[in-house]
Amino acid sequence: MQLYIDGEFYSREDAKISPFDHGFLYGDGVFEGIRAYSGRVFRLSEHLDRLYDSAKTIDLQIPLSKEEMTEAILETCRKNNLKDAYIRPLVSRGVGDLGLDPRKCEKPTVVVFAVEWGAMYGDLYEKGLKAISVSIRRNPAESLPPNVKSLNYLNNILAKIEANYKGGDEAIFFDTNGYVSEGSGDNIFVVKNGSISTPPTINNLRGITRLVGIEIANELGINISERNMGYYDLYSADEVFVTGTAAEIAPITLIDGRVIGNGKPGAITRQMMEKFKIVVQNEGTP
Ligand code: PLP
Image (cartoon, rainbow, N blue to C red; front, side, top):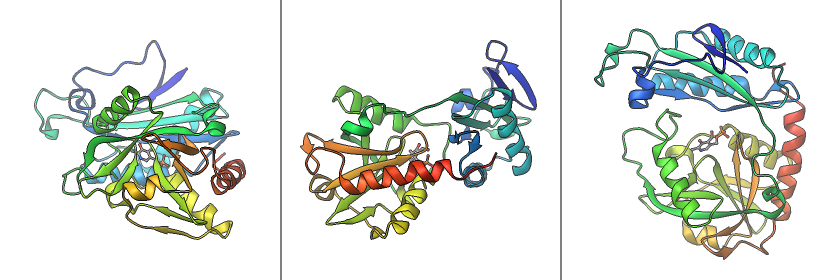
């Protein structure tokens, strides 16, 4: 495995980051998760836009242009001979003395690596995932919006831990107003009476797969809209599914012990999953 660090490639054994990197010390940095399908990188420019917007929000200047970052990502895939991959670019504030002040860091650290990747949830695409709504809440008044894909994912990790303890495959966040926010690593969609709803993105990550989901629903002629939803909407849904780069489109068939629909992935979810497979195979940056 060859990893890109600040313009050079290193083997997994030789790849080193300083313990004084503020990404490690304080979670000060941003990242992306991107997929390649059949040797083509899916929605690369959208992921790069989000990476640079995340960086801008935390006042971090990425030392590469988007074109240079594109090349670093494509070269990482080529060097590792990867066709179906999960690609992880990260940019941290860089190495500096102790103390939160970003001015202590001379230059950001840029890392890109990629691993072979198949279907994340295995047979759960057929069976459906069990989801747990977690006690940790998204707070719209919090300073760091969830649309920043920052190196500090502790809220999401706490959500995952709670879901794990309660026997769930995925966690569902609510916000402090009681509205459905998102999963620990994916966005949420609810199907009721043939129409799909998804929460607005003020309080969750603006998922790129979420947008693909909306496009697919439109292409299939299924009514889709953004709206705030509560527990009632989830528990009484006909179908629920999540979208994410890693998860793709995955059905949820049990939430907090409530069986969703008939307990099997529903017809609309299946249609969306099928179409998604076609979309990812038919586009991308070679
Ligand atoms: N929500 C969170 C918290 C995530 O980490 C992710 C994964 O990137 C998503 C949603 C889904 O976003 P995307 O479809 O861009 O991968």
